[in-house]
Structures are given as C-alpha cells and as structure tokens.
Amino acid sequence: MPAGNPSTGKAYSIKTFPEAGAASGTAGFQFNVSTAGYSNISITFDPRSSNTGSKWQQFEYSINGTAWVVLSNNNGALANDFANPVSLTLPATANNNANFKFRIVSIFAPSTSDYAPVGTSYGTGGAWRIDNFTVTGSTLSVKENAIAGLSIYPNPVTNGKFSITTDANAEKSVVIFDVLGKQVVKTIATETVNVSNLNAGVYIVKITEEGKTATRKLVIK
Image (cartoon, rainbow, N blue to C red; front, side, top):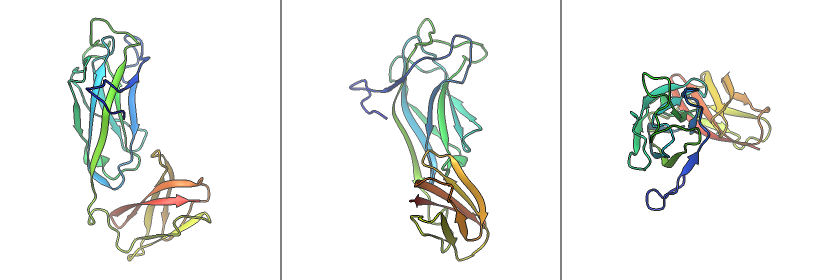
C-alpha cells in the first residue's frame, strides 16, 4: 500500500458507493492475502473518509474465498483524518491458509437502514482512503509445519506430474492454490499428483498427512 500518511497525505482511494439505504455491506476494500506458512495473523491499517462517506466500517474474513465471517466493526469511528488507526487480531483459522481473504465494507449504522455520514450528509461519491495496510504473522515452527521426510519432485514440474514422498508414505490430502489464493486442485494422493491442466506459473501446495500439514511452493513450466 502507498506509504506517506500523515506527512504527505498519500493513500489509496475508492469512490462510487451504494445509494442511501441500499446494499449495506457490499462495497469497500478486499485483500486476497495468502497466509501459508504463517500463524498469529494480525492486520493494521490507517483509514480515512471524506465528509460524505459512511463512517461505519465492518471487518470480515474468509478462509475459503466464498463464505465470509464478520470479525468486528469500527464503532463508527471513521473520520476525515488518519487519527484512528485500526489493529485487528485474526482467529486461528486464518493461520497457514493460502485462500485467506480480508475485506472492509461500508455498512448501515446499527439498528438503522441507512448509512451514517462522516459529516452532515451521505453521498455515493464519498471517498474512502486507506494507507499502510499491513498483514503480519509468525513463521510456523518446525513442529507446526513439519511432515517428516517430506519431498516434492520434480520442482519445477515439466511433464504435468509431480511426486510427494514422506517417511510415513501414507495417504495425503493435497490442495493447490494459485498466486491469487484460488483453489485449483484438490485431491487425495499417495505419491503422484497430476497437474497437467494447470498453466505455467507459481503455486502453493498444501499437504496434509496423518494430522500434520505443510505448505510448499510449486513451479510449473
């Protein structure tokens, strides 16, 4: 995200919100952020709005890219300045998840059916701004992220298939995500995984075996 707040006033800005009394929770910012390999996820950012923008922001997250869970809201604290930074701690379900998504949406003022403006009147052209948006986490420990003897080969993949070997050599759940966090393969495998339908590029592979989960980067040529 653009840096600069507050000395230069730089920020990322969006406009064209729903009409008054319509479509609460449908407009705002969305971030698709893989947390693969990380735990203890937290999010910080600096918000601001013009006077005609909605002052109520709701914070939501998804662990599968389709179902959204409400985390909290800002208690109507959005103002025409950067004086109210937001800091959020995500639940454990956000850990080690290549499909994690987070969004900030404009909602009606609680117990009403309309938006409450930052100033005296609401308008669809009211601008929301965000600066210094940061997602942080702790690298998973060896215990948390280890499958004994895990090996993926060949990597890069050149013939449409790759193999997974482990010390246990047990059945594995294999899920592959693209760089945008979209699930593109889900299968059960003992060793070989077919990826011949995938385009060349970089992917994240999530492997679960006997209750242990690990993630690896996979390159397909």
